[in-house]
Image: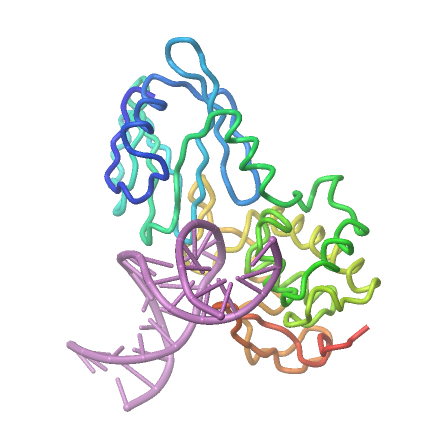
Length: 260
DNA sequence: CGTGCCCCCTGTCAGC
DNA sequence: TGCTGACAGGGGGCAC
């Protein structure tokens, strides 16, 4: 990274001065993920001090690579531009600006990572562990799944899809899930996420992969965004209810309260 | 401390 | 055609 241009200061968690001081002259070691956050492991310019650039795309964020000499139209809503050695650019683009970029030293990175719940696709995410955690909350299960401190990386689409697969009503208080429903939910979360990743995600309108492609999972959605459509299992019309500020979609027949 | 509500912001679409 | 309101994949702050 040669130079950092911050076009939208509200996207940067840390003060702009610190952000630039960390990033300018630094290089990318490796790229990873924690929950819904991109984690770029970096090395500082002089002594190679390790730190991390953490990026949350929010609702409309994209990370775009522009190679040197790219003649295509420049993106409409650039927020942060990283000018790279050799003339390329990495552009953080975000129409709604709900995304955030921040730098963290290794200690802060560790604290932050520990504040998030387990990765649902990791071995550490077990059915008994999920059941234990659910038992400690009275929140509606759909809201519980969206809480990144409980499980990391599940958003509204896949929370709703997993609840349909597990036949659990989205408003069910977490602690009232019967053991076999929490086991079913554990499996459903993992299978839905794996399928969706294999399909490269869900494009409802805006979402594109890092290579600009649409995700292939939208046609496979069972309930999300399908209000009024027939449930694939029983043909009952899918319903939508709003709580916690977001829509929940479900089959009132397959996912009735107390369905076992 | 856990939970629920509001807000951040821009774009799109349905309904009038 | 143009206006208004609802809604959108996320998450932080705050009151209770």
